[in-house]
Length: 219
Length: 219
DNA sequence: TATTATCTTGACAATCCCTTGATGATTAAA
DNA sequence: TTTAATCATCAAGGGATTGTCAAGATAATA
Image (cartoon, rainbow over all chains, first blue to last red; front, side, top):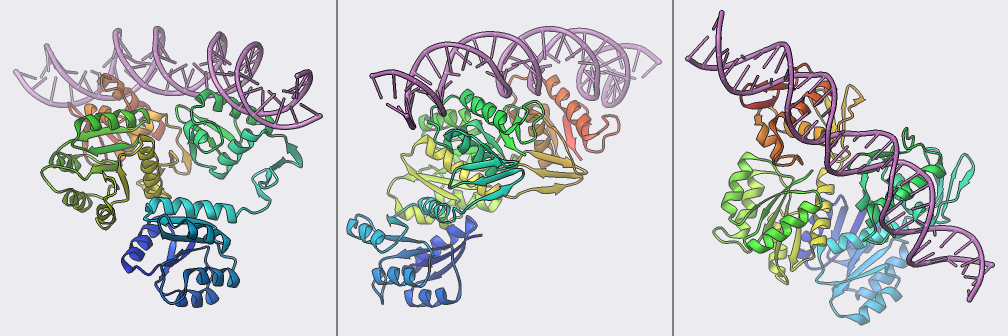
């Protein structure tokens, strides 16, 4: 569960965002005064900060800078629409993303997820028989490096990250850099090649199971 | 197969959405009058409701509240773009997501998937002797995974979700991805196979009872 | 540019499983 | 008890899906 620090002076908006984020499994702590938010940052850690630029007391820019000085927590800035100057400033200040008001709550979720995904990308892990170093695009099995192509690697990672879940061909297409109008059979072909490279047998799979009429599943 | 209840008064729009969702494997039941939709909610269960705020008869807000009162089914509200007031209201009313018209059909699919993912996340439950993880399509009995086919799983889930109720063959056909003109005998066959797989005996059933002349009932 | 690697898709066989008629068993009602 | 309707199950048919080959299209690289 990711922890979110929300700094927003419009109390009504604050409540709405907080409730919405809670529904998506985020733990949200809200402040309308940046001073209080900065204080809590000394004591507790958060996965992400959402900062509204329209703030009393301190200028939003200073708040952002102050947070960056204190911590390494990623920041998403929101402010009134069309304020392009702010947008540029936001990134200069070290903000990780920018959101123009008014925004769809859904949009906020997507941005948060994107930022967290980017930031938390860490180094090699071992999953099952596989050694996976995602940033370096290296997958090994029994110390033997598998020579995946770009798309094969993407599909493989998507499957293994969602192991246990059944993923439809459409999901696979939409979650990788495959063109959205790629035929389903293309996915089958990639799966076939992946299976071959990891030494899996389609008839008696150890890793990638076909779910008839639905999709594929990493066991 | 997820069941969608669509409440939309623009008949043309209704047809378009219905057709689009069908292509993505959703079973859609549409109403232009919310009154009828509310009635059906007493009798049948749905995975998600899509509610258009521009409705006759009852005010859309009241419909939303009424659905939330009756059921726990997640709701996606749609309404004319830019109606920010509605947007906030939507969340206050307990809607799970909000979609501004006009929207891309693809967008609707994404929202539905997102809401369903959130709502059904980690929703593995134990019912009777069964461990049921619906999103991952896993059913276990005594730690042994039952290898249901697509339709068998749908029927099994439909029965167990409505356990205690007698369900006619027609209801079973219409609530699953079985073609509407499927013969009743086909349902019998599926039931027979399900019984076999869960170790049930038709003559002395522990789980699925035949109700002579009417249908089947999960005890 | 030429060459190579990768992606995409049609083709076809193998496989899966849905459907349905047939048959005997079971049930309800006369 | 007899009769007609319904149910359980077998087994065959057939439609849909999947695995993989191979060829062509596209992209990456020398």
